Amino acid sequence: MDVRIIVETTFENGTTKRHRLGRLFRPFRRTQPEGFGLLLEDAKTILGQLQNAILRDQIEEISEASRICPDCDGVRAIHDYRSRVLDTLFGRFEVKAPRIRRCACNAKSDVVLGGSLSPIAHFFPDRSTPELRRLQAELGARHSFREAARILETFLPCAKQVNTSVRNRLGKVAREICDSEQTGSLVPSAAEEAPALTVFLDGAHIRCRPEYQKRHLDVVVGKIEGHDRCRRFGLVQQAVLSPASQLRQDLRALGWDHEQTVTVISDGEPALPNLVRNAVGGKVRHILDWWHISMRIQHVENAVKGLLQSRGFSGIPVLFKRPAETLRWYLWHGKILTATTSLQWLIVDCTRLNTDDRMAAEAARRVQARCRDLYSYLANNMDSLTDYGRRYRTGRPISSSRAEGCVDDIGNTRMGKRRRMRWSPKGAHRVAVVRAAVLDGRLTGAYQRAAA
Image (cartoon, rainbow, N blue to C red):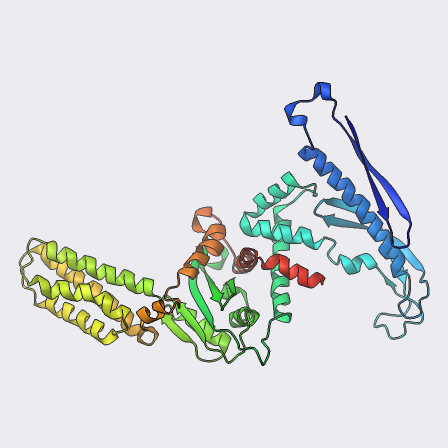
């Protein structure tokens, strides 16, 4: 079997051009199982030839159309031809791009009269296609830079990929994402009510490069949820001039109008809700994560259970068992003062417990330590406690589990400690921004809006 591949191009003026891309030979007498259909190497060769033919025809058509002056419809002269190397997803090609002289009628141009302009430089300012940069950024956000370069070379007829190029273009894409979101943020209309937004916050710790004289970097990750939309985000506060402004852009993208109250759910770290307060520029409603409260209650219950099971315990079991069992119920229903009173009575009862057994004394001290830890945690976050049962019954969130998922998706999967990689603040910030956009599907959308 002999397969000939011919491409015919029809331009807008009606002329046609044919290109012979190549031939494929499949003799049936010598065909092996691996020779059926189109092979990967054949596909890469054909795609490269097809890209070359389409690219040169497009440059020729655009160059001819650019010679027409938009003001007087005159034909402008060609200054010269320059060789340009264009890096695309299906190969790297050297093309001859014309430079066109400006028309004498264009007196209002901000460019010097008579200077030359290049249509190719307008479409490819950095001499690479947006699709190639987007795919490099997406693979660089999902895999290591070296692995992303290897994947591109394996499946596509692109030029030889270098890990530094993938890293640098990921940084450019991260800046383009931030710039496009800053200029194209969504503002709700006056007749449309702004949605209620909930921000789930948490922090991820990644290894830092040794020249920054610290072991770990703190990456703030989280998720913003509205009525029918959600948005992930990630940032390193040391790498941006204003972390609050970046978070403000994410809030505006979901319809925040500077007046709507924003609810923040976090684990009690003061820096996390303060970041949202700076972004909002006012008060926010902070709710303490129920999961962290529940874990501390579990520690108290386990300590009391260990005390009751010790051989030297000589107290009244109900005085210790009853407060530990009702503690969770009180906090779930928003009875904070009753819960803190139960904790204080547990501490007092452990102090009054007289025993000569060393194991029982250690168990009592363990109960006291767990109760003090929970009491301090509740006292420091007293304004952030609420009736969790009522919020749960009405379908509102009470936990920052969504932010915990973002820690794994944005931070640990790509920049976790087990990957044995060290990061600079700027590099970690760029990867976090691009990875959040990839997970949300915003990376392709940003380029589609830019192309439109």
